[in-house]
Length: 218
Image (tube, rainbow, N blue to C red; front, side, top):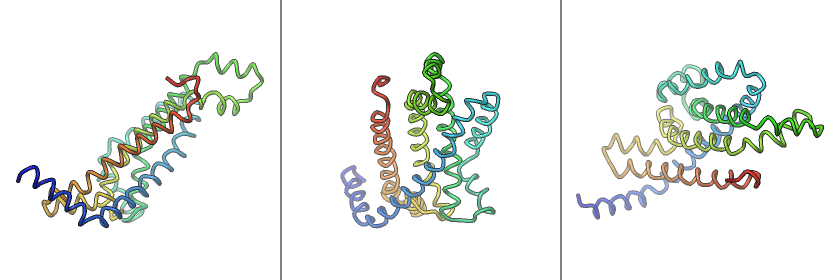
């Protein structure tokens, strides 16, 4: 098959499967949004907490890191007896995979804030929560956002496996293409997933720049 014929068939596949792709993107977006939401509200506070209890940091971060050594399909399979098939299974597994980059970067970013800056805040009469909210988190934000961006891209890719537990997403199209040995159909699921990851990372990068204090922007 020539390149021109391949591209033409691929284009026809996108046109003919437009409704299926649209549904796949919507389901994929829901999975990623929920997983990242839960990962952030768990990992960021935990990372902040561990900066005050550094002896606990490495053991807890190590436990979270172990989760990422479990193959994605195996983790989805482990959840079946607990929550069955469907989106709940996928969201729990994706959240577990998304925790490590956010947790590690939150802990590292806040831990590396210059102690003299914190002392200056204390000298001005700031309380601990004021120092955290007005000094530590703003200064650590680029590092925290880097973890969120990394985690989001990983989650978008891993979410394609959610099809194996009946959670939908673009993985449905990819798996259908594999079973039919249809390269164009595989690409009809893979290309939107890749574009989704690229666009999301770009948006998060712009958001990171916008919320980072101007004085520490590189």
